[in-house]
Length: 218
Image (cartoon, rainbow, N blue to C red; front, side):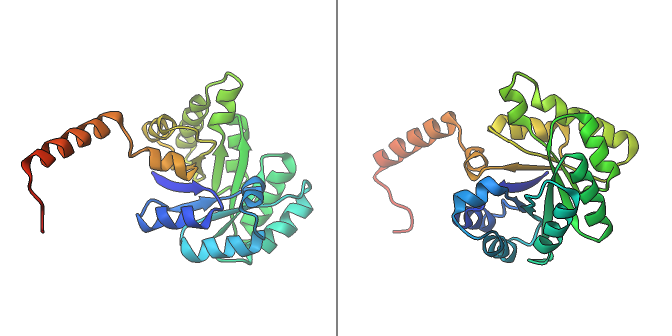
């Protein structure tokens, strides 16, 4: 399973990238706002650091506008993935941009029906949102499982990119189901290394080592 990091924070991306924990990056208008930077500038910097797909999102609501913005974003770097919303106009834009040779990430997917349409339109990635479904009392992980099953049934090549990841458990369940990619905030990815028993064991080892009065390499 590939790890994408969901942020436009250059320092956070660099830290994870240096550890080999970043296969790609996803951004959106909210993350660009949080970065406080120009979208072209920050996207270019991310693309220079991370060789994998870097999603940059259009903001137009009509197909023509999305296509125009998508082509502009795709000129920033060869690894830019144009991100479009799962609307009818977004599907039109997806088809046009894909036919033009660009990678496309269709975002804000909440049903298997939407995912089928995205695959038919040639999407490189489909981004089902787990956390937002959980927020309204539905099972976001069930959506991932349904899309995985449907795509496998028919050999669709669109990658299942699980988004709106809120916890380590979300990542583990996505791995069990077989999502191709997860995109998560840096803090959630780093939390995968944490466990109370690891901390407790380390505390005990350090206490016992101190009692030996020894030092290593000094």
